[in-house]
Length: 484
Ligand code: SF4
Image (spheres, rainbow, N blue to C red):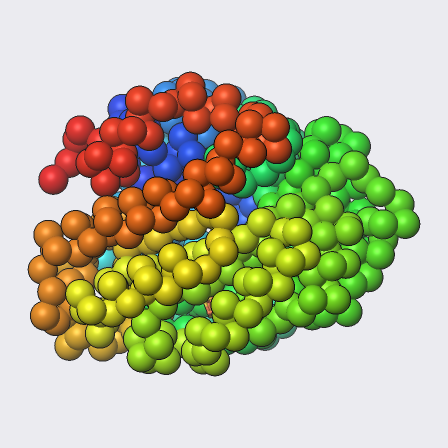
């Protein structure tokens, strides 16, 4: 039987052995839909092509069975994988499996890891047939329509020309985001109930994530922006309101997390969006991530009135010198003031922090802990610095300390980079101390008590998974009992 050349199966790989999925603390705490793939699927369908979605992260136990069934029933000529650095090798493994089930199928890889490495991906991995650099929607459409005959004409494509590996260069134009259909959420098995925001990060379920912009104009040393670049494109307030109304109407979503890097970067858009929510309420609340420079008391007051429940804010480190070395506008006093403004508006605040950056020391970590303890933040996420291939700092990372580049473990939950002057054991001990100092603050503990009535679903999930969370707190490992 022939393959269907107008059909693609888009896959979000799990990133590790499926048998370990039940013990993956990050899956239990936070399961986000693969929005990029859902967006590509909707785009392709709109253009008359066919796309199916398989999220191995959401369905690890049945993913390979579903994969086999899907391949044999629809016989797509294309399989697409969206990969981060940590899930890339699992994507390659799945690509080999797929080719053994359906000979002749072509694999195409996209995502941040691929956009960062470009031709290197095809040079090193013969099972990868094509790679897409940058935005995926139009590039995959072009690949499916004419990539077999005229691969040199597909912008953003990396391909094999005999023995040569070629990159056609970046696409000349970018998508107009308001012209895009809403992501094909309906193609995600179990959506929305299978997907969960982080515990204590939402008031109600079902909830979901949504993206309303692409790109970020800043250039933090540790941040990989190889897919969408340094421009900032966004959906209009009207589009955004309609998107939320659709999620409410079709899926019953009651809370949205805007997964944008910079939700408030365009102030007027956010004002208009909030006004729309106030004029025509949807019965929904929302979270967003902001940069401190782009909020002020009047805007925060308006956001709160429109339903803003929590704001995440990149702090990274409370050590002023280290911060100045890695990002622009490194002003800890300004950050503290903005956090007080957020709290003053009645919005919960989640601080996003990082440990182990180049230049980190025991003293800088202590300063960071002291600073964070002085802030009235409610929630907290501390990640282990990971130098991703697309980040500016990656180029010089070998001169900054010892880096063990193990892609499968590059998930911000392992110290693979050890800055000069530090030891891994020391970093691990300070990491545990950092968390303990936050979670033993009386104000933080009291806040979790109030979550009993402000986010009862979070408490239900916390109690259901209590044993695993406690084990994570003791072991400090994402996949408890199985590695290192
Ligand atoms: S960390 Fe945030 S502000 Fe910095 S470059 Fe990345 S997205 Fe932009």
